[in-house]
Amino acid sequence: MAYTQDQVDRLQAAIAEGAVRVRYADREVTYRDLEEMRQTLGMMKADLAGAAGRPRRRRILFRTSKGF
Image 1: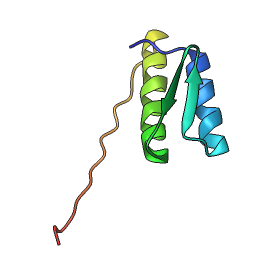
Image 2 (image 1 turned 60 degrees about the vertical axis):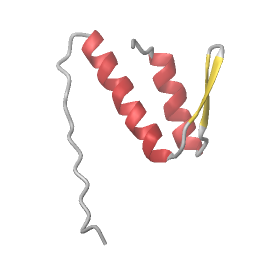
Image 3 (image 1 turned 90 degrees about the vertical axis):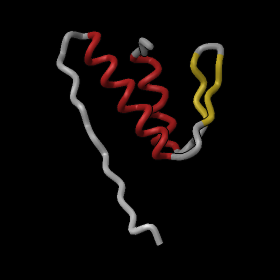
């Protein structure tokens, strides 16, 4: 999906305000938590960077648990 700079700006503003709802044009998105918002923001920025011809960075996150 192609994202716009306006969508990135709106999501960044929502994160800064502590809001979990963001309105994009004619739709509103409610995120579960701050982590989901940050992941989405990273995806949006990577998509915009790829569209601008810059190489995309890949970030791999590991989560481990002892299973207790």
